[in-house]
Length: 197
Image (cartoon, rainbow, N blue to C red):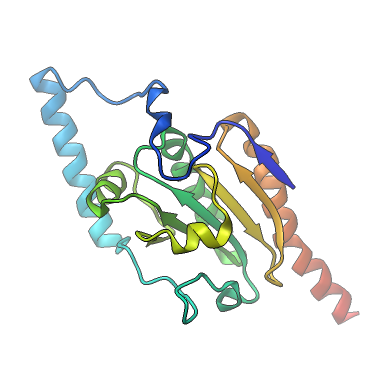
């Protein structure tokens, strides 16, 4: 299943989506500057406390992502960049998903594709992640997945099989996205119940 609208670009490493309107604060006034800096500092402190720093990706000897390291889990592999406006909307949703379904075996792994790590860290100060974040500076994992747009998400079931992917992120399609994820989570429960009988 492929969902595909609202993505930043047809090229994974170009910031073409900057033309989309942004809800960033007006930093021209001193009041907005101060409150923005305070908010950014508090967010950064929370990030440090939650240890949402970049981690070393579970990879095979070639540096590629290996889904078998997450056997028995439903995994969302997400690709994002700091300049991607739809990514700003997808992060809060993914945080919510991780919180609601992490105990059920959901793992969200987000690969950042920024050329400069500082840009990614700035994004995370504004849009913190409560899920795994990896830095794919050389684009090894992006090439492995054939990345063509950001954000792009790939959903794997507990057997490591790709069950869905979606290009872009549209809030009006959240129910569709979640239905696929919940179905993958529930499939293991159905199989477990069948084995018990």
